[in-house]
Image (cartoon, rainbow, N blue to C red; front, top):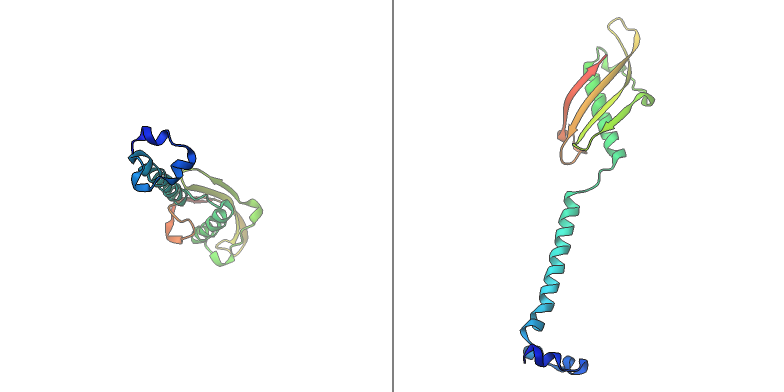
Length: 142
């Protein structure tokens, strides 16, 4: 059956035409649409897997623990370190860099508790929840 003959049939007659007698365009058009839709869904799923949104609260908490260990390594008496949370400020950039500034109270070489300011610049790659994916770019203790 040709496409022209198929077009002239009524809707009821079109339903009764066996699949093997359908014009090729009508036979494979449905498969093509289904294949395109499946491909589109697959592409969208793959895109969403590669572009997961970052939970900034979780990111900041993970970075905070990393920063505290970096700052403690710079102190004379790291076991005495206290990090007042109200002094911490976070700056997150789109290129996977976070800068955290704040204060730390710790003993100096004479045993006196003093407050120091710090600034730590970190970069993460892939999954920021894993410790090995973090790199310290800069760390200052003043």
